[in-house]
Length: 266
Ligand code: BTN
Image 1 (cartoon, protein in one colour):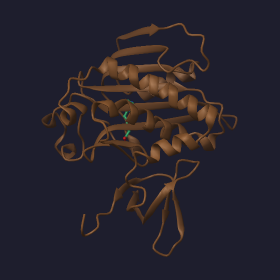
Image 2 (cartoon, rainbow, N blue to C red):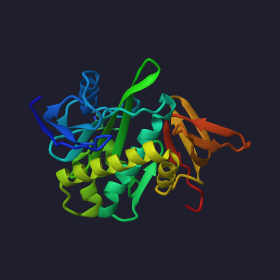
Image 3 (cartoon, protein in one colour):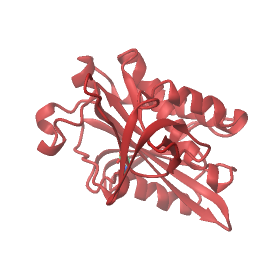
Image 4 (cartoon, rainbow, N blue to C red):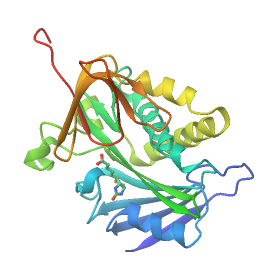
C-alpha cells in the first residue's frame, strides 16, 4: 500500500478538510480505506489521496477507472452532527465545492448533473461517492470520495467512456497541478461544509442550482429497471430530485441516473 502521512496543526473547529493527509502509491479504493480509518477513530477532516486505485468504486456498484499518475482520487472523513436525513446535503455541498474548484480553469463551463456528476462540455469530469455510517440512530461519519479526471487523454479512457467522460486538461488545454487542485478542493470543501453546518441547506442548494442546467427541463431518471420522467423543478432537503410528471403529480427521486430529454429544436 506504501503510505505517507502529513499533518498540519490547527486550532479551528471543525478542523479543516485535509489537516491530515494520508498518501498511497496504490490502493484498492480510498473510500474503503477511509471507512476503515474512520471506524478506527480518524478525526473529522482526515483526507486520503491515492496515485492509483485497483478497485475504484463508483455510484450504483460501478467501477471508477483509476489509472496511475493522471487523476485525483481522494476521500475525506467528515463527522457531522446533523441528523441522518440531512446527510445527502453533504454530497450536494461537495458538488458545489468541486464546481468552485474547477470553475477558475474554465469559467462558466462547469455543470452539475443530479445527483452529483460534474460535467464539462456535457461530459463527466468528476464523480462523487458519499457513504455514511450510522451509530445508534446518529451519523457516526460520512466518507466523501471524489475522483477528478485531470490529465487523462481521450485514448486512455476505456472505449465505452470516451464519448461520455473527459478530463480537465482535455477541456481546458491547461497544465493543472494535482497538488494545487487538491489544496483548492480541500479549502472549498471546508468552506461549503462550514456553510452547511452554520447556515443550513439554503445557500448550498442555491449555489448548486446555479450550476444545474437540468432544472426547468424535462428529464428522465433511470434507477435499476425503473424510468421516471417529468420536469425537474428542484432538489429537496434530502438532496432528492423533484420532478413534476405530465399529470401534474410531484415525484421525489432519491437515486438514479438523470438525463435531460432533448426537445426537437435542441
Ligand atoms: C461516481 O460514480 O460518479 C462516483 C465516483 C467516485 C470515485 C471516487 S475516486 C476516490 C474515491 N474512491 C473510490 O473508490 N471512489 C471514489
